[in-house]
Image 1 (cartoon, rainbow, N blue to C red):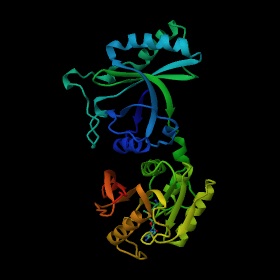
Image 2 (cartoon, protein in one colour):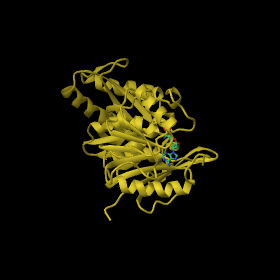
Image 3 (cartoon, protein in one colour):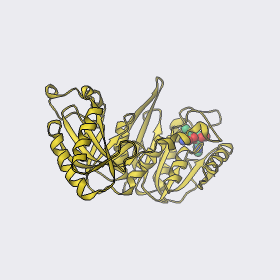
Length: 348
Ligand SMILES: C[S@@+](CC[C@H](N)C(=O)[O-])C[C@H]1O[C@@H](n2cnc3c(N)ncnc32)[C@H](O)[C@@H]1O
C-alpha cells in the first residue's frame, strides 16, 4: 500500500527523519514536502509530531490525467464506501522545493516544464472533481464528510490522489506549551520538537532525559507510552519537573542526579533525547565541553546496543563513544542555532 506523508514545512529534514527512524523506512521517495512510502504504516503514524497528514494513495498521475483517475476512484468508492466524501486540493508552489539538506526535496521535473500551481482555482477544481464522484453515486458533503479525498498537485504536474488517513492534532501542542505548565523556565524546546526527538530516539521501552530540566521530553515520552526517566542536577528543578508531570496526570521517574554519573544500570535504556545546557551557570559542576564529554560516555554505558541518543547542543560537538547517524541544524535566532545529533551505541 502506497502512503503519502505531508511533512511540516518548519522542520522538513527532521520531519523526514522522524518518519524514517520511527517507522524504520530507508530511502523513501521525497517530493518537496511529501514523502512517499510503499508498505504498511500501522498505528505508529499517530505518534508523529512533524507530519501534518498521511494519505493512502489511490493513484499518482499527471494533472492532464486527473479526471480519468477520478473516474476510476469514483468507481472504486461507489463499490466500497457508503459514507459521504469531499475533495480537498493542495497545490505546492515552486518555493516548497529545495530546502532539504539530506539530498531530497528536488523537483524531478525539468524547470522549463513546471506549471504555476498558484494559478490553479482550487475551489473550482474541488467542485469539478466532486461532481465526477457524485455522478457515479458517491455521496458528497463538504461540511461534514466521513472521508476526505486528498489531491496534491506539484509544479512538475505530478498529481497524487488518495484518501486522508490521519491528520495531526496541532492543538495538543499548544495545550502543553511550556508557558502553560505550572513550572516554567525560559528557552526550553517546544513540545512538538520534543516529541519528534523522542520518536527519533526510540519507539518503545525505557526513555531517558539525563538533563531533564522542566520535563519537556519526559512529558512527551510519557504521553507516548514509554517508561520515562528524567535526571536533573538541581533539586528545585527536579521538583518543578515532577509538578509539571502531575499537572498532566503523568507518572515518570524524576531523580535528582548527575548526567555525568547516571544512577542507572549498564544497557538499561532504549532511547535518550536531551537538550544540553547552552551556557555555563555559576552553579555548574563542569564546563560545557567537560559535561558533554563525561555525559556522552554515560549515555554509551546506559544505552542498550543499537539504542539511540538524540543530543541537542548550541555548538559543534564530537561524541567519540557513539556513532553519529545524523546531524541537523535548527536556527532559533541570530545567536542560537541548535545542533541535533542522532547517535547510536554500536556493538563494538
Ligand atoms: C537546557 S536545560 C533542559 C531543558 C529541558 N529539556 C526542559 O524541557 O526544561 C538543561 C538542564 O540540565 C540541567 N543540568 C546541568 N548540569 C547537569 C548535570 N551535570 N546533570 C544533570 N542535569 C544537569 C540544568 O539544570 C538544566 O535544567
